[in-house]
Amino acid sequence: MLSDSRTNAGIDQISIFRKMRVWDVPGDRTVLMATSGNLAISQSVVHYVNDGLVLPGQDQPRTMKTVRNLFEAAQLVGAAIRTVHRIDGARLEAKDGTGFSVSCLLGGQIAGETPRLFLIYSAGNFIEATAETPYFQIGETKYGKPILDRALRYDLALTQAIKLGLISMDSTLRSNLSVGLPLDLVLYRTDALRLEMHRSIDETDPYFNIIRHQWSGSLQNAFASLSDPVW
Amino acid sequence: MLSDSRTNAGIDQISIFRKMRVWDVPGDRTVLMATSGNLAISQSVVHYVNDGLVLPGQDQPRTMKTVRNLFEAAQLVGAAIRTVHRIDGARLEAKDGTGFSVSCLLGGQIAGETPRLFLIYSAGNFIEATAETPYFQIGETKYGKPILDRALRYDLALTQAIKLGLISMDSTLRSNLSVGLPLDLVLYRTDALRLEMHRSIDETDPYFNIIRHQWSGSLQNAFASLSDPVW
Image 1 (cartoon, chains in turn purple, brown):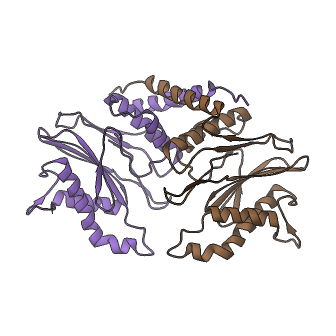
Image 2 (cartoon, rainbow over the protein chains, first blue to last red; image 1 turned 90 degrees about the vertical axis):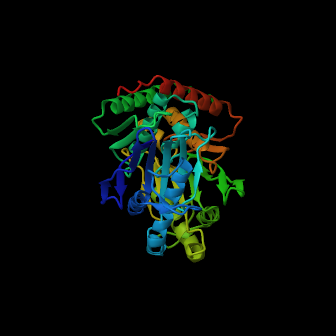
């Protein structure tokens, strides 16, 4: 899972806020969540996810550390979003408001299940990734989508997926000022039940710089070698 | 100038409408215009541009065939947009409306000037391309922007610019269903004062297919040859 860290409320209010959260209980669960949209909403969502909410059909509240599977984890985030909506929704959705906007990527593994990945919408409902659609994006998604559509496959090796995520994010960084370094990259490997890596990537990161320059050069070469029009 | 031809009003109302207009008076002027946004607005804009409007500071109406320079041509399109806004704006901008949305690329050459390129907004105002920002996009711009940002230069040869435009459009076609074939490609060469080419490109076009396949293959190879993470 990969996120940037730029939050903006107009181009003169740009700040760095981490958008990646990790709940790591080695041997039991590793849950990763990236958020986009309104920062006030997503920070409140994290509060309720840690504080605990009663899920549909249950009596006692659950938190991200006590949900029994990833589906319940997604329900928990959905319930947290709806809780925030009850408090803040009306004013945000008023004519002079900015709208109620938040979305979350939620992935990882809880002991007893295979790894799963969910995309949770502003309404608190969610979808799960499948072999046919093995990736999700949230936030400023369009600039980085073409390369994912061309190269991402369900059986892509994890190292290749890291490269691809960084290329996709780099395309977005170059074309849109509202996305900025540092990046947060978290890596979870099936059945490890512990986080393998949480790396903050800024402009001094040697590997990210290699990737950026190689990719730029490769694109220039690929472009130069394309056939000229035959018309 | 390059445009697609898909218009949608929801995914079950998809039609083909040309978005490219050409006013070609050999020896005197070649003016090209591509439009995006609400089709009802852009078709009405074309009507007023052909019918004639009085420009600021003038007495008699002018049409695209009688404007004296490209700046006046952009003023004419802006005046046409404002005329349509006076008629349709209030209902489109009402709470249950779809908004008043249109934008235009206007380029070409009128005898006595160098070639110029303008981007005209919904408000009828406009900006002109410069050596530092040598291209404009309208409509569904984000998917195709990263490759333009990486490869487009003011002094790029015309054949290279054609390739690049097709690659950029192909990225958008693959990632977004609201953009579709056929494409309209028009080609104007400095001081020709006549259109060099107007080509409709559909899925049977041999060169577009070569470009698509070569580019896809080049990207795959470039991606495969990137260095693995050093972490």
